[in-house]
Length: 111
Length: 114
Image (cartoon, rainbow over all chains, first blue to last red; front, side, top):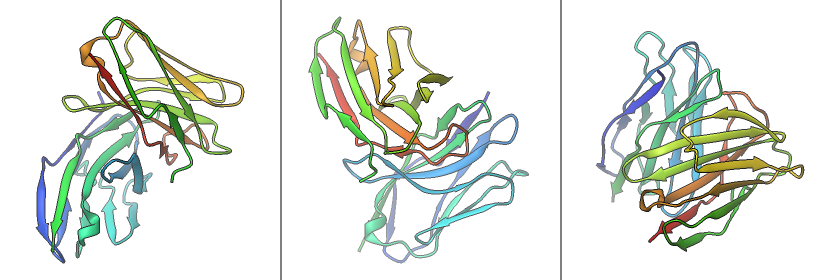
Protein backbone atom coordinates (compact mmCIF):
# COMPACT_ATOMS: atom_id res chain seq x y z
CA UNK A 1 0.00 0.00 0.00
CA UNK A 2 0.89 3.66 0.00
CA UNK A 3 3.08 5.10 2.72
CA UNK A 4 5.49 7.86 3.58
CA UNK A 5 8.67 7.44 5.58
CA UNK A 6 10.45 10.46 6.85
CA UNK A 7 13.57 11.09 8.79
CA UNK A 8 13.31 10.69 12.52
CA UNK A 9 13.90 13.73 14.62
CA UNK A 10 14.44 15.78 16.50
CA UNK A 11 16.90 17.80 14.46
CA UNK A 12 18.84 20.65 16.06
CA UNK A 13 20.81 23.05 13.90
CA UNK A 14 22.61 26.32 14.35
CA UNK A 15 21.32 29.35 12.53
CA UNK A 16 22.51 29.53 8.89
CA UNK A 17 23.22 25.79 8.74
CA UNK A 18 22.09 23.66 5.80
CA UNK A 19 18.97 21.58 6.33
CA UNK A 20 17.97 18.27 4.79
CA UNK A 21 14.98 16.27 5.94
CA UNK A 22 14.65 12.99 4.10
CA UNK A 23 11.35 11.68 2.83
CA UNK A 24 10.71 8.55 0.80
CA UNK A 25 7.43 7.16 -0.34
CA UNK A 26 5.76 4.00 -1.56
CA UNK A 27 2.87 4.43 -3.94
CA UNK A 28 1.03 2.90 -6.81
CA UNK A 29 0.32 5.24 -9.65
CA UNK A 30 1.49 8.84 -9.71
CA UNK A 31 0.86 10.57 -6.41
CA UNK A 32 1.23 14.23 -5.52
CA UNK A 33 3.79 15.04 -2.84
CA UNK A 34 3.69 17.76 -0.21
CA UNK A 35 5.65 19.24 2.64
CA UNK A 36 3.60 20.77 5.43
CA UNK A 37 4.90 22.70 8.43
CA UNK A 38 3.33 22.90 11.88
CA UNK A 39 4.35 25.71 14.19
CA UNK A 40 3.72 25.27 17.92
CA UNK A 41 0.03 25.39 18.80
CA UNK A 42 -1.10 25.76 15.21
CA UNK A 43 -2.50 23.64 12.42
CA UNK A 44 -0.47 22.46 9.47
CA UNK A 45 0.38 24.84 6.65
CA UNK A 46 1.40 23.88 3.16
CA UNK A 47 5.09 24.64 2.61
CA UNK A 48 5.47 23.33 -0.94
CA UNK A 49 4.21 20.67 -3.29
CA UNK A 50 5.01 18.81 -6.49
CA UNK A 51 2.45 17.01 -8.58
CA UNK A 52 4.58 15.06 -11.04
CA UNK A 53 8.01 13.53 -11.41
CA UNK A 54 10.96 15.95 -11.66
CA UNK A 55 8.85 18.87 -10.45
CA UNK A 56 10.58 21.07 -7.91
CA UNK A 57 8.48 22.73 -5.24
CA UNK A 58 9.89 25.79 -3.53
CA UNK A 59 8.79 28.34 -0.97
CA UNK A 60 10.46 30.57 1.64
CA UNK A 61 13.89 29.23 0.71
CA UNK A 62 12.82 25.60 1.07
CA UNK A 63 13.00 23.23 -1.90
CA UNK A 64 12.09 19.63 -2.67
CA UNK A 65 12.30 17.71 -5.93
CA UNK A 66 9.95 14.85 -6.82
CA UNK A 67 12.29 11.98 -7.70
CA UNK A 68 10.43 9.04 -9.12
CA UNK A 69 13.55 6.93 -9.65
CA UNK A 70 14.46 7.08 -5.96
CA UNK A 71 10.86 7.57 -4.71
CA UNK A 72 12.02 10.53 -2.67
CA UNK A 73 10.99 14.09 -1.89
CA UNK A 74 13.72 15.41 0.39
CA UNK A 75 13.29 18.86 1.91
CA UNK A 76 16.27 21.23 1.79
CA UNK A 77 17.09 24.76 2.84
CA UNK A 78 20.44 26.40 2.41
CA UNK A 79 20.44 28.58 5.50
CA UNK A 80 17.96 28.00 8.32
CA UNK A 81 16.69 30.68 10.67
CA UNK A 82 15.39 30.49 14.23
CA UNK A 83 11.91 31.16 12.84
CA UNK A 84 12.09 27.87 10.90
CA UNK A 85 11.81 25.92 14.15
CA UNK A 86 8.72 23.76 13.70
CA UNK A 87 7.58 20.24 12.87
CA UNK A 88 7.80 19.28 9.20
CA UNK A 89 5.55 16.67 7.61
CA UNK A 90 6.02 14.96 4.28
CA UNK A 91 2.74 13.86 2.73
CA UNK A 92 1.41 11.96 -0.26
CA UNK A 93 -1.94 12.29 -1.98
CA UNK A 94 -2.83 9.34 -4.15
CA UNK A 95 -5.15 9.18 -7.11
CA UNK A 96 -7.84 7.65 -4.91
CA UNK A 97 -7.74 10.79 -2.81
CA UNK A 98 -6.26 9.07 0.20
CA UNK A 99 -3.69 11.14 2.03
CA UNK A 100 -0.72 9.77 3.92
CA UNK A 101 1.50 11.77 6.23
CA UNK A 102 4.92 10.97 7.59
CA UNK A 103 5.47 10.97 11.32
CA UNK A 104 6.87 14.49 11.32
CA UNK A 105 10.38 15.80 11.97
CA UNK A 106 10.88 18.34 14.70
CA UNK A 107 13.42 21.03 13.83
CA UNK A 108 14.96 23.38 16.38
CA UNK A 109 17.25 26.15 15.15
CA UNK A 110 19.46 27.76 17.77
CA UNK A 111 20.97 31.24 17.41
CA UNK B 1 -4.99 32.35 9.71
CA UNK B 2 -5.97 29.64 7.23
CA UNK B 3 -9.64 30.64 7.09
CA UNK B 4 -10.71 27.22 8.40
CA UNK B 5 -12.44 27.33 11.77
CA UNK B 6 -12.95 24.51 14.21
CA UNK B 7 -14.99 24.35 17.38
CA UNK B 8 -14.55 23.66 20.17
CA UNK B 9 -10.84 24.23 20.76
CA UNK B 10 -10.73 21.87 23.70
CA UNK B 11 -13.04 19.09 24.81
CA UNK B 12 -12.83 16.94 27.92
CA UNK B 13 -15.21 14.03 28.28
CA UNK B 14 -15.51 10.56 29.77
CA UNK B 15 -15.21 7.11 28.27
CA UNK B 16 -18.38 5.88 26.63
CA UNK B 17 -19.59 9.37 25.77
CA UNK B 18 -20.30 10.90 22.38
CA UNK B 19 -18.98 14.22 21.07
CA UNK B 20 -19.37 16.31 17.93
CA UNK B 21 -16.59 18.36 16.41
CA UNK B 22 -17.44 21.11 13.99
CA UNK B 23 -15.53 22.55 11.05
CA UNK B 24 -16.22 25.47 8.73
CA UNK B 25 -14.13 25.44 5.56
CA UNK B 26 -12.55 28.42 3.86
CA UNK B 27 -14.99 30.47 1.86
CA UNK B 28 -15.46 28.85 -1.53
CA UNK B 29 -13.82 25.52 -0.66
CA UNK B 30 -15.94 22.48 -1.43
CA UNK B 31 -13.82 19.73 0.13
CA UNK B 32 -13.43 19.02 3.82
CA UNK B 33 -10.96 16.53 5.29
CA UNK B 34 -10.70 15.17 8.81
CA UNK B 35 -7.47 14.01 10.46
CA UNK B 36 -6.53 12.57 13.82
CA UNK B 37 -3.13 13.45 15.28
CA UNK B 38 -1.91 11.40 18.21
CA UNK B 39 1.52 10.88 19.69
CA UNK B 40 1.70 7.19 18.87
CA UNK B 41 -0.05 7.16 15.47
CA UNK B 42 1.06 10.45 13.98
CA UNK B 43 -1.31 12.22 11.61
CA UNK B 44 -3.97 9.88 10.23
CA UNK B 45 -6.36 10.73 7.43
CA UNK B 46 -9.91 9.87 8.44
CA UNK B 47 -12.32 10.96 5.73
CA UNK B 48 -12.97 13.48 2.97
CA UNK B 49 -16.21 15.08 1.81
CA UNK B 50 -16.72 17.01 -1.39
CA UNK B 51 -19.79 19.17 -1.83
CA UNK B 52 -21.80 17.10 0.61
CA UNK B 53 -20.75 13.67 -0.64
CA UNK B 54 -18.21 11.29 0.89
CA UNK B 55 -15.21 11.25 -1.44
CA UNK B 56 -12.51 9.19 0.28
CA UNK B 57 -12.20 7.17 3.43
CA UNK B 58 -9.07 6.52 5.43
CA UNK B 59 -8.50 4.98 8.84
CA UNK B 60 -11.83 5.98 10.30
CA UNK B 61 -13.27 3.74 13.01
CA UNK B 62 -16.84 2.51 12.80
CA UNK B 63 -17.56 4.43 16.03
CA UNK B 64 -16.76 7.63 14.15
CA UNK B 65 -18.92 9.24 11.50
CA UNK B 66 -18.92 12.50 9.62
CA UNK B 67 -21.10 14.52 7.34
CA UNK B 68 -20.97 17.68 5.30
CA UNK B 69 -24.02 19.91 5.26
CA UNK B 70 -25.49 22.01 2.41
CA UNK B 71 -23.72 25.10 3.74
CA UNK B 72 -20.49 23.03 3.46
CA UNK B 73 -19.65 22.96 7.13
CA UNK B 74 -18.80 19.52 8.44
CA UNK B 75 -19.21 17.63 11.67
CA UNK B 76 -17.24 14.68 12.97
CA UNK B 77 -19.11 12.53 15.46
CA UNK B 78 -17.16 10.35 17.84
CA UNK B 79 -19.13 7.84 19.91
CA UNK B 80 -18.45 5.21 22.58
CA UNK B 81 -15.29 7.10 23.32
CA UNK B 82 -12.23 5.28 24.58
CA UNK B 83 -9.09 6.57 26.26
CA UNK B 84 -7.19 5.97 23.06
CA UNK B 85 -9.39 8.45 21.18
CA UNK B 86 -7.66 11.28 23.02
CA UNK B 87 -5.94 13.24 20.27
CA UNK B 88 -5.87 16.43 18.26
CA UNK B 89 -8.48 16.40 15.51
CA UNK B 90 -7.82 18.59 12.50
CA UNK B 91 -10.13 19.65 9.76
CA UNK B 92 -8.77 20.87 6.44
CA UNK B 93 -10.43 22.25 3.34
CA UNK B 94 -9.55 22.61 -0.30
CA UNK B 95 -11.16 24.13 -3.34
CA UNK B 96 -11.54 20.94 -5.34
CA UNK B 97 -11.44 17.23 -4.81
CA UNK B 98 -8.27 15.89 -6.39
CA UNK B 99 -5.12 14.61 -4.75
CA UNK B 100 -3.22 17.65 -6.06
CA UNK B 101 -5.19 20.15 -4.03
CA UNK B 102 -3.57 22.26 -1.36
CA UNK B 103 -5.28 21.63 1.94
CA UNK B 104 -5.76 24.44 4.43
CA UNK B 105 -5.82 23.25 8.02
CA UNK B 106 -7.79 24.57 10.93
CA UNK B 107 -6.25 25.02 14.39
CA UNK B 108 -7.61 21.69 15.63
CA UNK B 109 -9.80 20.42 18.45
CA UNK B 110 -7.97 18.81 21.34
CA UNK B 111 -10.01 15.93 22.76
CA UNK B 112 -9.21 14.42 26.11
CA UNK B 113 -11.09 11.30 27.15
CA UNK B 114 -10.87 10.50 30.85
